[in-house]
Length: 342
Image (tube, rainbow, N blue to C red; front, side):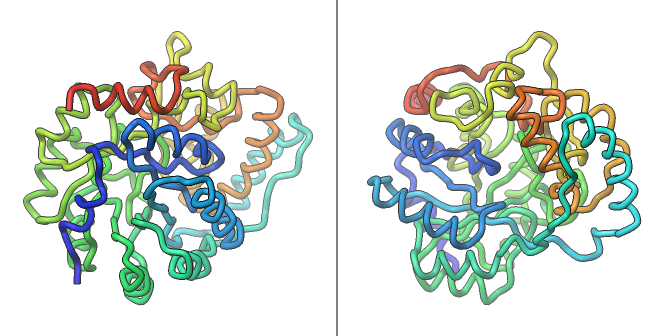
């Protein structure tokens, strides 16, 4: 049975380090944020079960305190139209030639979900959160049986109601200003309500503990989220430029560049995600089909080549609207500063 108190017992402070897939999260980042008081989440997305198992072993061997793992729930087949994917590939060919790479094609639609659940039942962690939907009941039962707290990412009251009925222990309530992928159950933008209003709307349909996500990059904003009913705030963008972050140099510089702004786009992965606006986003955002993870596979070689060359024009530079306040400091100091008024 769900235990609404299980999640709150995990928290030393009301701060959570967001899982940031694609190389941004590092073991050093989790450990540093933990020293500052945050509960860290490791991103399981894009990793094979073997890679996840190796990372869990390394994190635990290094003495990491309690932490969670985030998993991507497999995409629905209806989101993948071959003709739209092929058309987008043709549009991207000039970019691939410019960078001297081939577009990607191999797609693992389920993101090795079943295998990663098996890893997490064999080597349990304190909490498992889910993005892009709700897992099968069997997966939830298996994870609950080994003692993991279960958390669903939701972006509107309807998703919150469904997650509550599915037996989750807590909800990560993600506002539209959050950086990276929108955690919607389908391939749509999600609610545009401000964070405080979204928390209030979710509270009307669910009694579960709420984690506030999106737009929290200062102690004052964390305090506001707590006053709005959240038991914790989940923060990612504020840690992007930290000394332990795996963000590329180009990404770090772009966060505080004059005139920098963000937008929600499908250009990089086929799912709505908030990123810093660059040439790639502007050129291809309107053409990108709602086809995740196929678009992610297509653009991955472009993004890798851009990162290697320091070419920010093609990078998926995930960031929330508070990106300008990101700073090059230790994760421990950033976490401590966020908690300074709690």
